[in-house]
Image (cartoon, rainbow, N blue to C red):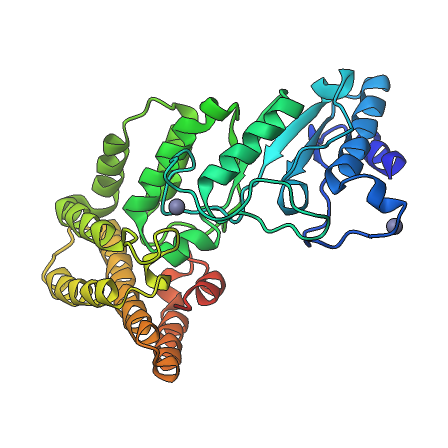
Length: 354
Ligand SMILES: [Zn+2]
Ligand SMILES: [Zn+2]
């Protein structure tokens, strides 16, 4: 395996960072006596160290990226990083984290562990304080170059449906990266992540470029560009959505639409209905403004349909909730001509179950 990875690096000098990951499955390690001698992280660290040492010896410019993910949340116990470290980059991928709170919010903690699981019994935490502890314990094992691998614009954004909330979350998280010695971020996301606006993408790009950037300015400029004469309405509407979608007491670490909070979902539905009427009265002044207003109307309609499904689900009416989800799915399929450049419909269809 080491020969294979080094051979690839040798043949592909255009690849500056070569990622060497374990499988995407969890808790699938052999339990025989020989394999049980070391933890999965120790076996893995041994491998990436060997590859990096060979890459260094052969004076290749490739750097090997290794991954802290479900199987390797705990740092190695016996294996120690050494002079090959300058050819390695650590990647921190907290896939099961909470998106209701910033990564560094210490109040976002739960019953999950930050390590110490027996072999093949890893249960990744769902809250952020545990992930920060995981990051810090890896940092003691490997103090070298490191970055975050985050999933905001994969399913999480589509589950939360909160453009302003995600812009704020991303801005806050990126500003906090340096505090846990992460030097940047790779975004694991759909390419079509501009529904109904590009706000989360704008916050991600601008804050990665300059951590001192003012979020309010990003929001202001972005909405002005999209909505022109109607930018104040758009801001007010999205702020209303944001305040209603903030997770409640009931289940604070999951998206409101999936938290089982019937009362808040009902309120959201009422807000969407009232907003639909207001949007109909708006007059865009050019094609661009009209396009973004159409996307905003579409988003608002979907929010309405999804809030209905959430209410029914929270009331235990499974069959009716499923019908509501089917109605939302039908709406998404029928309107793909409008949304396809901005939204990955397939991914949204996977994300809308309450
Ligand atoms: Zn074995
Ligand atoms: Zn949380």
